[in-house]
Amino acid sequence: MINFSNVNKTYPGGYLALKQVSFSLAAGEMAFLTGHSGAGKSTLLKLISMMEKPSSGSICVNHNELADIKYQQIPYVRRGIGMIFQNHNLLKDRTIFDNVALPLIIEGVSHKEIRKRVSTALEKVHLSAKLRCYPHMLSGGEQQRVGIARAIVNKPPILLADEPTGNLDPKLSLDIIRLFEEFNAAGVTVLIATHDLGLIARMKYRTLTLKEGTMINDGIVDGLQAKGGIDE
Ligand SMILES: Nc1ncnc2c1ncn2[C@@H]1O[C@H](COP(=O)(O)OP(=O)(O)OP(=O)(O)O)[C@@H](O)[C@H]1O
Image (cartoon, rainbow, N blue to C red):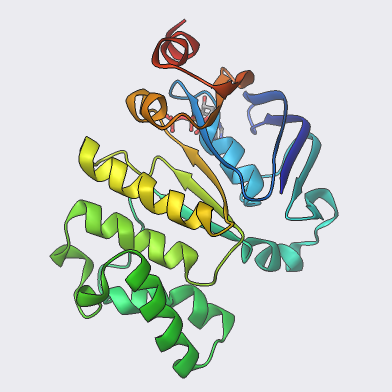
């Protein structure tokens, strides 16, 4: 579903953020992506979602060779990817319903279909009662769940999350990861970038570890190994 082959990313100014990164994530797999601050986690997610271009190497996402994708086709590729951010990126002056509906409005989906799909997405994140609220009326964990509902409302086969539990306490973090597990059980491929080594150690999922732009580990990590990968 996601394949990186010898990918390098140099930012303007010459900083080499990813070095010869290769890995594959199969359809229906769920994995964590970890590493110290600045290791290249967000860069890797941005390459998958075509927010950045690789300097060399090849990336294949959902059967699309990204190098062959023309500028006008980028929205089509992005429709297959749900993105979740730490800071939710919700529109403050719009209701929860409107925030979740946004990707469907952009796609030109009919009002009737939007109502149906937004209701289903909010049910999945257990927020049906809040659809007329505004973001500031919700707790941090609830706002994060709205972000998740918005990411899954058009049923993408891939979910990418960048520090989705960053501001949440351990109990709420676990609730969010359980939601990802539910989507994964329904066949969605999930990649979660996180610093939270406690969470990673508890969940026992495949973990990709970056260090200064190099993939130094790929497998199930226990707490100590994960710490070594980051602090060394
Ligand atoms: N647009 C950019 N231009 C230049 N350098 C960049 C740009 N974006 C990121 N970088 C650099 O690339 C490196 C990797 O950044 P990235 O955001 O991918 O790290 P990260 O692992 O996600 O870090 P964090 O956990 O702190 O979010 C950093 O040194 C960063 O300064």
